Structures are given as C-alpha cells and as structure tokens.
Length: 166
Image (cartoon, rainbow, N blue to C red; front, top):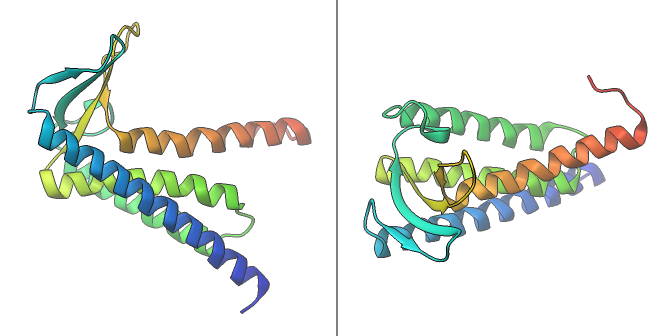
C-alpha cells in the first residue's frame, strides 16, 4: 500500500467514525424526543431554547411539504458524491474529512428519519430571534458544524495566499 493510499484510508476512517458518531447522536436525540415529547407539544428548557416536537414532511425550511422523498433522494446522491470525492480526490485535508463526516452523519440521520418515520423529526425551537421561526434538529446542527468551518478556512486560506476569488 502506498503512503498516499494509507493516508487516504486513515482519513476515510476518520470521516466514517465522525459520520457514525454524528448519526448515532442525532438518531438518539430524535428517539428521545419521540419518546418523551408528544407531537406538536413543547418543553420549555429556558426562555431561549424550547423543544417543540414536529415532523417535517418537506425539505430545508419546510419547503415542498409532502415531497420529503425528493430531498431524501437528493441527499443520498450528494452523500454518495461526497464519499466518492473523498476516496478518489486528491488534496483533501484531514480537517476536511472530519468536516465532511459531520455533514454526512447529519445528512444520513435526516434520510434515516424519512425512511423510518416518513418525515424528519425536528425539535430545536429558538425563541426571541427577530425573523426566525424555524424548528430544526441535531442533525441539521451537525451539518452546519461541518459546513461553516470549511467555508471559514477556505476564505482565510484565500486571504492568506492572496488568491483572488473565483
């Protein structure tokens, strides 16, 4: 096994472990909500965070209600593309493998919700944010935990190398 293949395998293992951990945590959180908070009811943790159990039969921000299968299929296609790019691509850093693990684990959790429940279980309900009335889940948080650090590092890397924006 070449050094590059060994490093790629190690990085892919990190990707897989992060994705599995995120998937397990997200599914456990949804299971807990499903078991302890009846559908369409709220548990107030404090004045800012409420747990409101709803089902999203659509996609991001509740778009296209009743078309969750479409978002599930798109998610699986994107996740397969990420996996292929990470395995066959070059120049991917270990940090990016980890970030993509967060994205893949969160995405798989939402797809699994759609398969098991016919909809995504959403429950994080933040209060007192002007213009914000969305309810989301831990999987969504994990997807953002993977996306935003990569974007920030990409912007900072361009700034430090002096490369113009495309």
